[in-house]
Image (cartoon, rainbow, N blue to C red; front, top):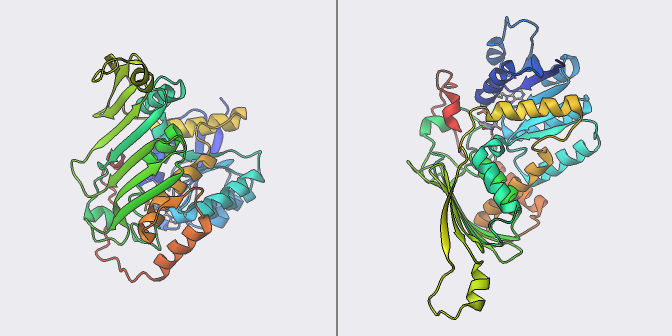
Length: 386
Ligand SMILES: NC(=O)c1ccc[n+]([C@@H]2O[C@H](COP(=O)([O-])OP(=O)(O)OC[C@H]3O[C@@H](n4cnc5c(N)ncnc54)[C@H](O)[C@@H]3O)[C@@H](O)[C@H]2O)c1
């Protein structure tokens, strides 16, 4: 079988996991790795036919690779993506594709200059059967017109030692955000995949409320969509056990996705139609309880995205998750942060320059010092983090 020669740049928690995933795939093989930390590269020493690099420029110039998986801290995704394209390599970048919308715009412009190169994003949660089923129900019109969304995603609990496990984490300068940028990009991507980008966003955020960090670890946002639908999005890394509950109120009924189950209370007659036609003052549409079977996890979610990326290269087909769609979750997350910082409602499209300037101010004015930096957590099971 034909195999794509892949390289990984960034060999921390996620990059190491991707190396394992690639080892289990038949349509690609790992031929080079790169990390600015030589100790991380040494972990791969002795692997046959695998070249190790500590310089990104050497890696892109000299490595025998057709494509790269970028698994470095977010701020470096745009610059590494653009270097990769300039060297003729296909790119699969980790989420979030960038820290802010302006950088995502540059990446998309760079990709547009290389239509022959694939550009994919690691939004692995799109492979989860329950998420695919919800998307299908919405797209098929099974829910009817959507009126209200409520997503409480507070089960991304993180400890102090997690935040101390990397100097870049949870700082304005090193990471550029908190729960909206590190943990929630998955739900923000699903939110835009399911419902599109809202027209307006109003949010409140708390910075370092639960942890010794300077970025946001709690956010509550109110969303307004062009069809009049409204939404609430609540995220936190400070609660345990926390909740992951998505409720969609629609003309055809109410869907709740929680505890791994999709429950749909289906109205036989759409709400507005019933309301307009009935002669009962306190009547309601007849409603059926439907449990929709779909697994709420996918143990090979990251591997599936890599396999799809390699297939797209081999067969010149579309990737499952085009990285250009990664700008939407950034637009929503950036708008939430901007709204909270400026205490104002943010209208879409987000002014990317305004947000980038705001973020730069936060980084420039940061007096935050990271204390008690810890080990890389090499003996911990990284897969429990997602
Ligand atoms: N898709 C998912 O489920 C998922 C889960 C966790 C992390 N991530 C993403 O993966 C990325 C990395 O996160 P992590 O938890 O693995 O971080 P990490 O700190 O464990 O690893 C990052 C690695 O990148 C290296 N590095 C930093 N800058 C570099 C550069 N310019 N060139 C080469 N190497 C460089 C560091 O030395 C480190 O080894 C982040 O963007 C994060 O959002 C995705």
